[in-house]
Image (cartoon, rainbow, N blue to C red; front, side, top):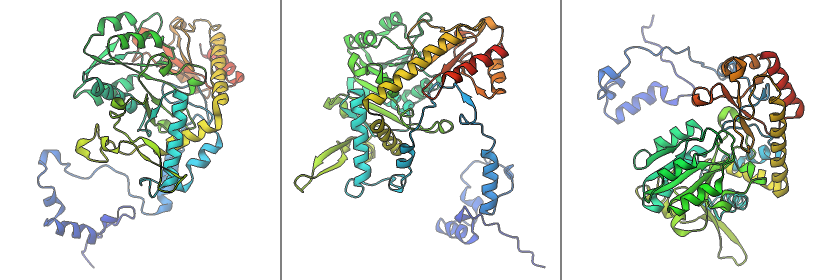
Length: 464
């Protein structure tokens, strides 16, 4: 009987074959894997095997295993959802999925203008449509998400002004604030502006106290995380008077009914294009944009790619390609404004399809529809005993805070009871916003019907 130990070869890890492993060891003059990792201190190594399930050695077995995991998910397609807080359930026109699944776009990971004309024109059209929506001249190719776009805009403002003090509204997503802090901590001095507990917006008195001649940027969301529409003109005016850059994050789907930040003094506008034709995808369908006026000094602060149009050698023909490529890390990594990696290009193309499909009238109608649904939801929820709506007496867009203090129940208890009825209720704010008591952030978009809102109110009546 052979005493040779059987070697397991994993079909999805080519280097698991004994021949491949030995080839790699020979290439680095190591006699064994342990010798290869000899430089790692012993106390950092795991002595033994990981507690992992048995490998799936066939495609069928792996597929069955993954499908069982996926079946545990409960999506917003199965339940009635009123979740928002940064990732939103909007209607996705079928043409968006049709275009972004075309192999020409899905597989076009990289490439330059001379070998990928279609993708670069599609991105130019996207940035042009976004520029029209935002009333800005320059829009970047999408970065990972709106969080990164916000952090990058703050760093851009610091480079532009030569200052390092950043004032950030506290009325933003707590996760976004953590991301901004992490991204900027090396060379940006961050100060958080408190939230006005009466309005739910940025406290302008605190802003005035914090502003000085060392302030590089004043950043705020409009609408903010609590759904409140800020007085953007007043905030931007204070920032501009102090010589700071007003940077505003905006929900692009609101711009059919709300003035774009450029109209009230913003120099940088950021946000996430997820509402523009992207499914929620369990939190994965995100891409961030940054926009500015065509001011050369500001344009040179963009770390990400910008696309322009230029004539070719053939009269009457035009090409699409990078603008000021030398400021990116793609040209020379050590000279880039910031390191730039993979962009969310496919979502930019998708958003371009969405904007082209909707047009100005469509964007206005969807904004009006969202405002109408929010108004109806406030009216109906305010009739429920113990429910305080709206918590802030300010205009809102798409989402607003609902307070349950007078019901005697916690948001966690209410949400669990509603989930048993097939309803995803609002985000629980009690942990990150304890000053709001037992409050939740409820979201209403164009996908919600009057019957959906009535169903929510009836379910709340039963659980309260």
